[in-house]
Structures are given as C-alpha cells and as structure tokens.
Image (cartoon, rainbow over all chains, first blue to last red):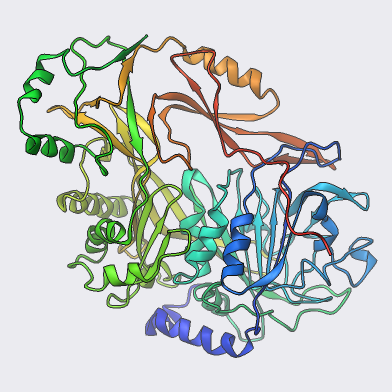
Length: 271
Length: 345
C-alpha cells in the first residue's frame, strides 16, 4: 500500500510544481464560494438542537478581500436543499445545488452535524437535514463546480466512511470526527493559512487544538494502473488561497449513476 | 475571602522595595511576563492558607511582526537544528493578514513555514518537507519520538525564549496524527504519521487552559511542527518554582466545592454530555488580559435526536467560580442565534 517515497524523492517542491502545472491552467478566472450557516437552532423545528456562535462571517470577509465571489446565507436563508442534488428527485424533491452548494469551488456549511449528515436551523420544504449519502452529489451531476467541502459541524466526516457513505466527487473535504467547539475566526484563519500552507497542514494546524479530532480527506479517481499516490499528490499540494487544485475534478458520473471507483486518503488527529 | 496583596505585608516584599528598577526588570524577566503591562510591584503571601489559590494576571498580547519573528526564531532553530533564518523577519513582515495574523513562507529555509494566529496567541513553525511526507515507511515508535520531543523541549528552553516555570515535561500529553487511505467500498488502512506531545502551562500545578508548548515528531524521526500558544502569566517566581501573583492579582481561599460545581453543571445542562476538565486558569478567546481565578471548568455537548439520529451539538466551555457560588458562569463560544447574512436571491 505504501510505495517507497514515490515521486516525493524529488521533494515537496516537485509535488507543488506538478500540482500547479495541472491546476493553474484550469483554475477559474474568479474563485467562487458558497456558504450556508445556521446559528439559530431553537426555533421550534425538527432540527432544534442548540444555538451556536457565528463562524463564517470573517471567512466571507477574507474571501472577499482576495477577490473571491459568492454568497453566504444564514439561518432562514440557508436551506438544506442548497446541498441536495438538483438533477433528479431521487436525491430529494427540490434539490437546488445547481445554483447553490455545487455552484462554487468552495462549499461551506456551518451548523450541526453527525456522521455524514448536516443539520439546518431552518425548516424549508419540510426538511432540515442533508444526508451526504442520499441527498448530496457535490462536484458531479448538476453544476459540478465543487472542489472543496468544508463542514463546520461535529462528526460529519469519519475516516471509516470515506469509502462509502461520505463519498462526494470533490477534491477535498474537511471537518472533525468528534464533538468540538469552533472559534468565530477559525475558518478565516484556516483559509488565510492556505496562502503558504497546504490545505492539509492548514486544517490540521488551525483546527486541532483542545482535543479536536480534525480530519481532512482527499478523493481522486481510480484508473487502471493508478495507485493511491494519485490521491496523496493532491492531498499534499492543494491550497485554497494559493489556488492549487481550486478546480472541479470533472469526469464525474452523470445524473442517477453511482460513482466510479476512487481512491481516498486522509489525515486526522487522535487525542 | 480575597486577600489583595499589598507591597507591605511581607519581609520578602520589603526586601524588594529596596532593589533598583533594574532588579525589578530581572524579576519580570524571570517570570513569563511578556508585556510589562502589570505593575512591577510584587505581591506574596506571608502565611498563605494551605488551600489558598492565586488569581493571576493573564495576558494574550497582540504580537507585531517583530514579536512574531522573535518568538519564531528559537522555534525554527530547534526545528531545523540550525541557526535562525536570515529572512525570517522579512518573510513574517510581508505575510501579515488584514486581521494581524501571519502565515509566512520563509524563503531561505527549505520547507519552513511560520504562522501566528491572534485568537490564542499561537506561534507555530513547521517543516513542510516533513509534514507532507506521507510516503516514508520507517516508524521509530512512540517511545523514540518522545525522546526526540524531550530533547527538542530542552533545546528550546536552552534558547532562553521562555521560562521553564510551569512547564513540566512530566505533564506532557501525547496524541497522534494518523494517516489513512483506501479504495472505494473498502475500509481504510491507517498508520501513525506524527507523534505529538503537548506540555500545558501550569501555575502551582493548576493548568492554564489552552496554553503551553507543543511539538510533533514525524514517524521517520524528524521534528515536524513546534509551537507555543496561549496567554502569558504575570507572576513572581520563588526559588522553588512556585508562583505568586503580582500586584494586579490576589489570593483567595476557595469557598465552593467541586461537588457543588458538578451539581451546578448538571442542573444547568441536564440533557447535555458534560466532560469535567478540572480546575483551570482560563482566559477565553477574545479577551486580551484579565486577572483570572482558577475556575472549575467543563466541556458541554448538548445532544438531541433528529430523524432517529443522535446529534452531538457543537460544544462550549463553561467555568464556575470557586470563590462565589452565585457568580455568573463563564461560557465560550457565545451563541448568536440572531446572526444574518446576505439577502437570498
């Protein structure tokens, strides 16, 4: 499973250079984001859990300062259907990711979560949840613009689920495996750190204090003869602010089809 | 029962009255003082009650690029076992974000990254050539990694960048950075990538929450990351290493029992999962400085059931006074259910 040093014998600079060579020509002229955030979870709907602090306002400011464009919808304006696949009602009636959750390079949800689920404070279309397994198909099918999923909620990503229920056609997803608290500006700090650090190092450095089991995962397409090295090469070089691998993966399955085989790789802290 | 320490209540203090300002400076240097914001007047107990606790001034200063470089320099020296980068200050100075944090790529040292985040006054240095080594096969094991960490910690202390006061290697807490990989439909294969060790800052045996020294050792045996973090403590350090509050602080005898705070947290959050953290000095993020009593601290995770799924909410920290059972609990982060965003189109 572990090839000796692989092509990293040439050092990280080579990895970054390779990543850049592939990614930069494909990079969007304008970087795009989509953010939904729930902080009001005591309003009498089925997802009442507990009110939380605001954590994406400063992230949006930092993105805007760097020329990213997008929207940040909060509380009654943030709907679960924003992350539901639009192409077919088999993913849930009223899916709208064509215009929202899958219509941007960086897709963010802040609120509550559980393994492969997101919970919204709003109750829209008789729903307040997103199942990564049943509803979401980010980076594929309709829109298919997503490249990085940031899940600012507890437990959403579990390493053991990446080969099954947590699947998305994104380059990377980041979150936590346990119950955590999140400071108001930590997502902003993470984003800013990706100017000089890889997304992996930035997430692991900025989001792991206080016993938090921060996890960042990468997924890449399996092809005949490929190895998991293709996954690690992206994982070890992608940078949001540095604009490396800020591109949709492309080549994902069409509406209604299951995913082709893929590699996944990840890192997480274990207290 | 609080005792505001004054300048005249101990022989030891009187002795200090006679010293020149230069000696006061030496005293402050021997503490972990960073800013000199506290008065150089010294307080100490003449006959402290056996169970007395101190309230100390904690400071989380905003660091200038020069400050960041000064803290990062010894960190990078230890990380690379070499003299500090010549371009460190320049690299830091040109990498300041609008919010005052720093994320620098230090050009003259291969792989060196330096970060400063204001939230908890964290200065981090890491070697990307090591942290991004997800391929090497060798694994030195936890014991050997801890030896390397111990050497690194001793080397860092030897730089004089920080006082050893309140940093006990015996208190080191171990954790691990795990890497995993797999193919769709299959369970992952995991292995250790880095062995991390954190030494919490303590004051007379009581932890300062989220403050201390931390480093990680890659499984190949090389240092990967090293950082200092958390508020600084203003104190007077005795020869035996014990600390007394400066003039801003005071001592008090706890009047609230741990059993009482346990009962209070259970009553305040009856349906939540509660993890007791113990007695802690805590300067919540966003607070620059404050005189802080140790408080009984908990991590609270509300739970709910939604569509048959058990949901563990984002948690928060709660701390109760040990000197006043009626005082309001400190809670962080602060919920903001009225938050708004863009107008939906």
